[in-house]
Length: 318
Image (cartoon, one colour):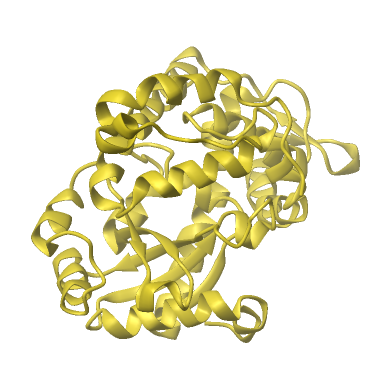
């Protein structure tokens, strides 16, 4: 953990340290991403978004179960870890006195695969190429490892973005295009303008994080450098590459949609969380019916589809 993390996000660091201390040595790294780090419409009810990298799923979940911090049996949670990785859990120690963390729990090998050259989908990769804070690491070696994996993901951006690049671009503009593509790759309750708002909150991050990879692509002959810090593809990607990545994003969207069914099992009290999230991003008050609360898998779909179809075009500002 860097001193800047403790200064910038003391509540998040305290929560990460509490989790690591309860996890029987299984936690390697805790990262933060999302609305709190970007300052894009979080409120007092918003959860902190964590990525918790562990060395063993079963040890991690058993330790949280022993501290009464797990809503389901550890064996069930460990089994779900192998299906549509990662699991999403709520970590709410002391009844929320330290805050609420929505945690993506993933092992080191699965994290490397998710950010590697052949990711199974874009669920984690689309989040980790954005601004991320390192809250806690087990050692300096783990801190170096996590930064190396994320830097590798930044360096490979051109590989999967090439089919979506037509005009010239700079590093910051590439970041905007990344968000547009990634947001289309999931069903999300936010406004259609959410990608633009998220980009504006971290344009400087993309300018800095993507620049080394763009220069490396120029040296490799993949890109041509233009005046004013702009770039263009040296040649259009072949049809096979276009088909590969377009299929990847279609598959990714299907996996992200199916993953919601798993979240309903692994994420305790998921329904109030989703309702608050939708209210925050749409400005609407949502009153669920008794049937929607009792049997959401059967009766909540019409309302969910209505939210997706009628969500506002522009992001609400607070």
